[in-house]
View 1: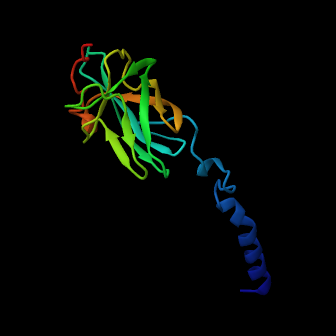
View 2 (view 1 turned 45 degrees about the vertical axis):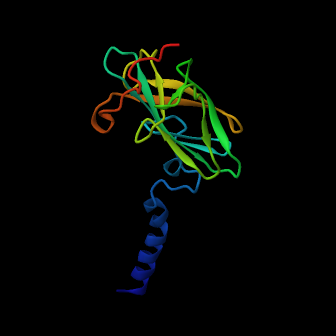
View 3 (view 1 turned 90 degrees about the horizontal axis):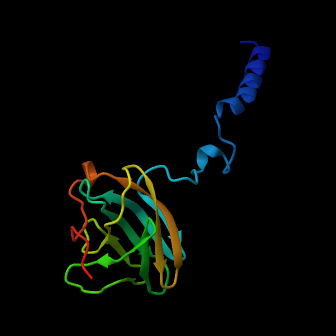
Amino acid sequence: MKRSHVAALAALVVLTVPALTGCFNGKGATTTTQASMNTGNGVEARQGTIDIENATLVLGPEGSNSATLLMRLVNTGPEPDALTYITINGVQVQISEPGVVGDSGADIGPGESISFGYESLRWINTYELDVEPSSYVPVELGFQNAGLAQLSVLTVPPTGFYEGIAPNPPTAPVG
């Protein structure tokens, strides 16, 4: 191959490399950042030193207007905190824990992780939710130290992975 052909080929490679790199335009490229709108179940958020992981509302039995909030809370800070306030679609709800009467909060120690509604004794239920599956519902979580987290959480039917998950207790507590 002649030197002029090699030089032309090298120049062609150098000129085409930027075109072959795709959409990458640095750290701010749309292909390397997440959209700010929730796109599926399992909402993630951070409020102060509390990480909120996989928040999902599993709808209760058809016609019940109930749902269970699944999520995991992780305290990444050096001080204890507590979940003290919860609303689902504007209705204040409580944490229910079998055998515990009047427990309205959940303590979260430093470095501790607690779950709700799935493989857990703690449940956060609503009995006043009349929405379709795949709706986004406003959820507020108030923490003693970390403050108020406002989420938009997807509702899912109790099928597939969520089969068998239902409010515990199944009906709203009296009183």
